[in-house]
Amino acid sequence: MLYIKLFGDWKVYKYGNEFNDFTSKKALKLLFYILLSGRSKVSVEELLRTFWPGYTPEYSRKNLNAQLYYIRKDLEIPYDYLRNERDYVFINLSYFPSDYSEFMKAIDNADAKKASELYTGLLLEGFEDDWVRKHRIRCQRLYEELLKVSSKTETENPKVIVSSILKAKILLEHQKATREKYFIPIALKKDYVKEIKVRKGDIVLDLGDKLFLILERGTKRAEEVIFGFAKRLGLDLSYVVFLSEEDVLNQLDSNIA
Image 1 (cartoon, rainbow, N blue to C red):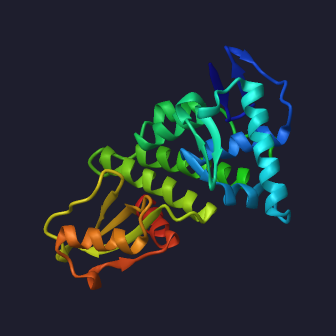
Image 2: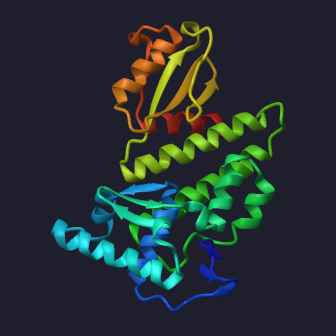
Image 3: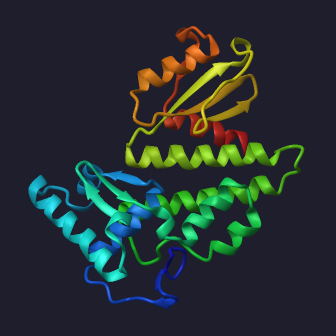
């Protein structure tokens, strides 16, 4: 049984005991990177670009496979729970519980009390890689924003709206940082829409006279997702305004200021 503490004085626990006998520090960083992505699969290209910039694909892939092997060996992880297949590294996140995943769940649920219990210090103190700093800043901002919106009355900021806003920020800030386009941000004027029909992974934000939507792309092309969305609502595609991550994040920041 594993537990990984990433806030403050980071630690890895194996069978309830702190574990420090890692074969490779790079393997440990690779594991942290995958866990912080929050995704069940991470592209090999992204990992090679982050950990082996400037090296040949053959050399980089060989090293990636070796580092994944070290993680499995050191932490006694079954192969199926962390494996490399063609273009992706797959991970069973349920096998790697952490304070970070609990913190993100608390943010998603707008649970300020739980988030405060988990936020025991800066994320991965002692690590100064660019990707660590980006995640660290994002956690700080999300935590501060949660405390800010939680201090307002429930009438001013219903919990369900706060939760959706923070979830949207998590997704878009991660997408902006990694350049992996898993979600499509768009906007619609309320006048154009009578009823919203979205899929389970989509997010709808009702902010004033506009509706902001974060559509999950999945394995489809962006054009297919937008066409399917417009078809469900009976909308002309000309009514759909495509946005950048920065556009939506700025709007969300002003909404909770």
